[in-house]
Image (cartoon, rainbow, N blue to C red):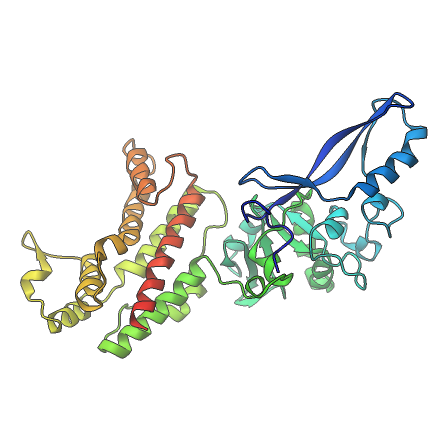
Length: 400
């Protein structure tokens, strides 16, 4: 079953936007404007009204006798959803004192539940909220994908269902979940922190968090992570395969525990993102077992001269390239492993953030990731992680 938010033209996920439309009554020569909800696609520009024609006609019949020409209205909820009387809040959640748009619950596909009115209303928060938890020694923020995550207190998740991150970089949680999360007295301080970061709805919940909890298909229900969580999973799987097949430890680190101390960048912040490059380079490149790689390569027929370049021993990345080509039999191993070379270059750029040479070198990294020179730091980061995931997925598939 195709998700209702998917564009009928290009299959991208659409978003909801309220757009002003003007209506004229030729009999009375009166005109007015009304804000109506539209499905819009950023990719191809397709748009359409969410509401059928009937609510508009009903609205016009009721409103026309009393309007002043040129007035502008938000379409009242009773015309959007017939069971509603007027503008509404979900009173059972008033104790939370959050700002939210009740129309989201009725218009965003999959959220309305007749038996649990308002529970799945999205409440939005500024992403800065996560800074406190990510920088506190007792708390951490772990992103299970680029669009979902949770806050942890001393290693234990603070919320049962975590949070989503929409395409505008805003955090959101369901109103009903928030009511459960902040029910106890010990959570009052956290409630105040969330209240302070509460922002108006932008009506966009498209994320792995939303799709997996409101599935319209099997693929929606079983969402695969797309961030470092997936990368560490594949790295661990590949390392186990290498150990089973060749009897060596690929890396010096315990990959199972990587997610315990790695901190993913949570904001569009250059220092935070480039610190993540430092960490990823350490885990993926610097900790490769060079001696074990040389031993395996020698057994495959290479000699010591193959491990030198200009009289110096080649490093871990070039050894890894040889492993992929000579031992695993991959064609074009240099091209395949190029994302790790980009990572290594980005790591080196960390110490040149303020230097004049930074921009040109950074543009080169973007180009190798097939990105525009104007791509933002977070877009570059996500593209790099995605390309490394593709690399390790191919390596896993090769051995399997």
